[in-house]
Image (cartoon, rainbow, N blue to C red; front, side, top):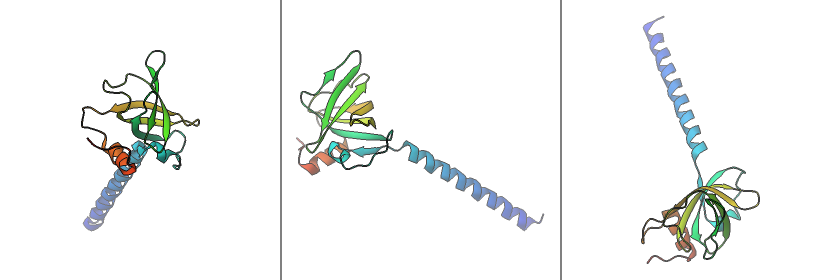
Length: 144
């Protein structure tokens, strides 16, 4: 094999390897992405069964129902819609009614959101950016 052909073979092999690595990386990132929705958005969104999403909004007043053990159900609203959320786990210490929350999980066929993680605001001035932007755009939430 000539030096020129050997060099071209090595370059082609390297480019093939880099292309395969980039393709696998983009595939893995696409599988792990979770999209952010507000309760009002879920009515018009086409979400595949089992697709992971993030749901954000305000915990509805009077909607928190504690079940046996660590099971809890609550409503998340944004002024334009409401979604019931079911979570089995320990809630953050600052979780309470009327506060901003972001949950991650899947939407069931019955319209109930089954969360596997719940994130609450951490101090008096913080609200998750996605939630704050959506609530401000709808005129539901005003910063203090």
